[in-house]
Image (cartoon, rainbow, N blue to C red; front, side):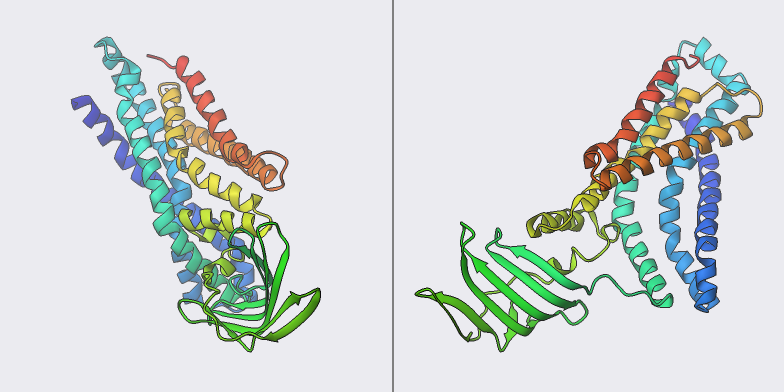
Length: 354
């Protein structure tokens, strides 16, 4: 326990400094990547700083794995350079047991990062994207046109010309009802429908139906039959990375039920879970690199952590792009880099000094 506490005390200050450094670096990169657009639209300086402030949680989420890798690799390398690891090995303590606190930290940070992304990063990124769209005069995706939604196991098909998310109004709505065999029952058309909180109130609806092989029509009396939630018309229009995990899972289900493209949203859903394991992966990598650097420890640890991060993110970007394009299954696109780096870490760990 004494050695465990000692290792953690050596690790934490370096991790805090590294996190601050990488968060600052990522925030500056995002700021300069959008600075020209901000200047072109004459966005006030205070609003630019506000947008950057809301990007800080996302920067911290990206910086966590890199900071863990750097801090743990530097800590172990520094201990080895001071011959402290040699003393520990001479006392009969194996390297895997000495490094176990770092593994526990990796597991804890992986769990923390998943919930941190879901509860903090997603809402702040939604605000950041909303501010960016507002000041750069970009149209929000929550109110969309030409929406087609299937409901009740495909027995109701909604076709909406335009959905006003803020007012919860469907404009130019057509509702096709069919039986379980897919045969036509009726068509309801209305210029507008408003959400009452429990059901859609259709304005002057007309229903078309077959009567003895004759297509007839009549005014549809007020009805409370159509109770599909407004979110079902919004979820397929919003960006998947702006939704919590539970809502994104519903988004994938909605897209599948509506017959709309869902592969991109499904890949992003799997990526939420795979990305959370990165902290554990980098801990395995850092332990496997522990003791390999005896000179220029700071520089070598920094280069190793940045190189590993670049390779991982590039591989992840490629596999996710292939998954979203349908070349490979979405679950493989999300988890393949994770499996590869775990295998690399275990192979390096076999050759680590003990």
